[in-house]
Amino acid sequence: MNFADQLVKEIERKDSRVCVGLDPVFEKLPKQYSGADDPAEAAFDFNRKVIDAVKDYCVIVKPSLPFHLALGEGGWVCFGKTIRYAKSKGLLTIADAKANDLGNTAAAYANAFYSDVGADAITANVFMGSDSLKPFFDYCAKDKGIFVLVKTSNPSSSEFQDLKAENGKHFYEVFAKAVANWGERFVGSEGFSSVGAVVGATFPEQAKKIRRELKNCFFLVPGYGAQGGDANGVKNCFNEEGLGAIVSASRSVLYASGGKDFAQAAGSAAKKMQDEINAVLGL
Amino acid sequence: MNFADQLVKEIERKDSRVCVGLDPVFEKLPKQYSGADDPAEAAFDFNRKVIDAVKDYCVIVKPSLPFHLALGEGGWVCFGKTIRYAKSKGLLTIADAKANDLGNTAAAYANAFYSDVGADAITANVFMGSDSLKPFFDYCAKDKGIFVLVKTSNPSSSEFQDLKAENGKHFYEVFAKAVANWGERFVGSEGFSSVGAVVGATFPEQAKKIRRELKNCFFLVPGYGAQGGDANGVKNCFNEEGLGAIVSASRSVLYASGGKDFAQAAGSAAKKMQDEINAVLGL
Image 1: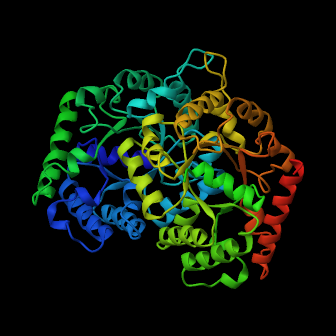
Image 2: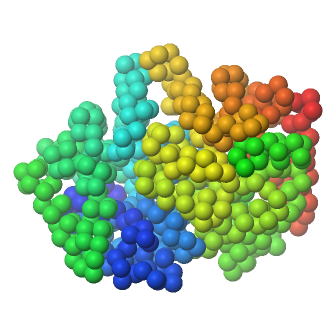
Image 3: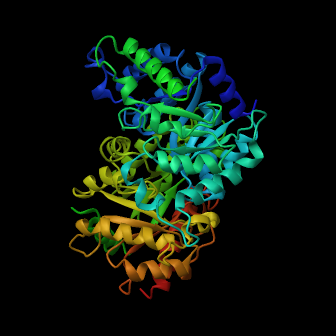
């Protein structure tokens, strides 16, 4: 099934627009993991317990490649196990790698993330243009998805993404337009494309503009919670039916308590986020 | 020692401006590796033999993260072992990850690549702006380096990088200027900064423009060989003293023979490239 169709189906089934980012940092894990022999093993146990706790309140999880590689030699194995565990619990998955490389190298990324690890979607940088994304699009023709960076949630995203091009359009609008064009071929029966866009929760005005122009595009909206994005800020990312976006939080869910009850606290934080977003959408 | 100083010292000692990209693809390895139980183990053996063969003709090697992750579960370990083996043979190393993420996530990348794996430099995407690169700059204040994408070697790099901004400058010139500014703080005693730029061998005119404006910036120049860049094409990346750039080839060196004599052939290809580049620079 088309990835965007799978996503809409899960959003409607669970009445949730929440994505949980899995960014395990060994030093930040609850005390019970301190002194663990293998940071990657500890992180997998942590991820697994978080997944169990949040799985009813979110539709998708997004393990971060850099945070997993920083766990040491076992980091890449932990990344794969986490994706597979989440899928076994009925969740969709995004490999958050912000990948971007030459055609044949991008193909290596696509095979690694979609085939070997089995992720449903990947995040990718737009910078190198269409040939650097083609291997991902080839998988979108099957059942996979991609979220392409358009307007990121970090403060210095304005340095380049907000510059104006000669035609008077902001660069993020140029990227958005390209994403829309690339995605046309992959629009599913629910009206959304498997080629989505990353649009930060921290820039509601820009989100509004992009939402208006990209009717068929699913937004992955990071920056909710610890980065300062709130439910009102993300409202602009949705269409009038309350569809078209998934909102992601990491730290505010993973480290909601920091203690023994971290999983329970993560579940409560995810549920609270689900409710806040639905409320602001009038759902 | 400042990374750019280390690089100049090695270039002068070996009279080489060559970087060898390590892009192992299991299916493309010489026949002797077919049927190997573990693609990552096979790739490490291949990398090791290539490193032994090219080490006198190049100053630096650049293992590609995506190609290593595509080797399967052992890919990340193979990546680390390859970096450490190259260093043990007196080579400098670049982790080719084209990394780009939020500040705290970029810090995870920086720790993984510089501290855990021990790479001397990393490639990074410019798209998210300065706060996404700051954790790398922090390491440049010590002895590490970074090469930031400015004008990439792939055909579709023109789609966004060649657009003009409102001020009439091409976007790649805007990135180049930013890289120059970021690098000012990290100029070593040889006059070059540890913050370098990735400038494709396939776009000599753009390279000329960037070289003129970025006196202190080291270029990492991919695209030589299989991608169509030649020695004349890379001439524009160097200054009048024949410094300021390292030129990278991957496929044309790694798979120079494809047979039993792959290592010898890789060594010959690297030496040929060293000689061609020196010749065109009149050295």
